[in-house]
Length: 444
Image (tube, rainbow, N blue to C red; front, side):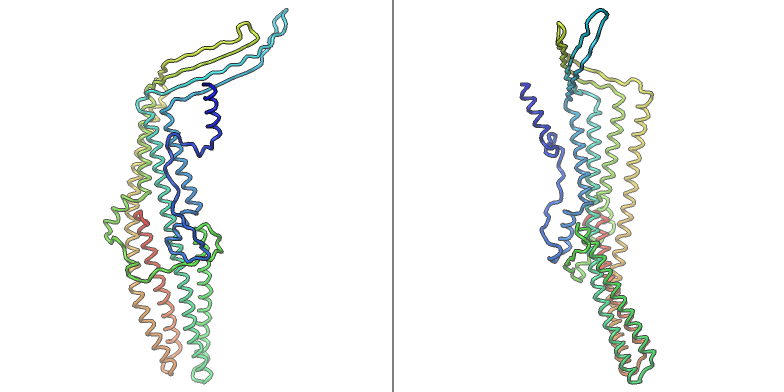
């Protein structure tokens, strides 16, 4: 029998720690459905980018490890329902010399095994386990919040990059328009139809438009790097993106009722659930503090063996079994203050949850108003662009036939360039604010 017990102990120590889960503590799984796509070669949609980031982002992976650590703590707390066994052993060499006697050397050794099993403690053990479970739930919800925050970051980076790319295209279009005005001013100057001022003003605007193209191209590169880093890629990775359609359906909300959105946020936001779980943990800690002042009963058993082989009676063995009562009758008022501390911490956690709910409602309200304003801005930008295009067409025609001056033409070109950019900014502003609104209600 001893041989089998020793063999089992050796096998348990040989197994890797990660493979052992005898108390069934581990349930959380890493993100699933990871896709096998080459971000540098294939055109990626937003859903692809999100899935890649969830599977590869190191910050989210670190949060996941925190959840697994909390699960391990739950497993450790469950061990309180099992007995504990402790084995100790000592061996030493002692010597003594008495008057008129030879030197005597002893080589005693001893071993002892003791088992203890907590039988009853007024629910303190269960409360400690409940607290650990609540802390795990809080960590799990915090992980979910980090996941949603990563999704929002990827959406924002994706939309920023698309907006920058379209802005670059728009800046090139505006450069071509300024070049057209500059070319026309040069031609009319050579024919003596306008002064040198017309040519110089057109040239200045053309060069400024060239600078805008360079600056916008830099933005494209910056946003590409930011998106690549979220995907755990090198910032210089070239990423091909699929562009969303510019239609009203893509911009609309599934639910446009602000009160309903706030109610959804209070029910779904992982931050609120995490805070509520933390309050549950503090409540369990309060109960634990109360039970610490009460008695507990444990079953104990021990077996010991000692040997001093040089004596006439070289060994001794003994065993014991019984119940042990432990009752901290007086601890210098430590238990009293521990209970008060736990009570205040529980109330603090409740107040933190209440404050967080108000904060979340305000976030939803602000995100909703920003979204509605962005939608209205996009609608107006479309009208402004149509008007600016017509104004430029008329101004250029008037200047071409000698009925308009260069200032009117350059003003029309500037308004057209601004209208193009405003439409791009407004469109992607709607999408960014829509993503922020969904994040504020705990969805993505």
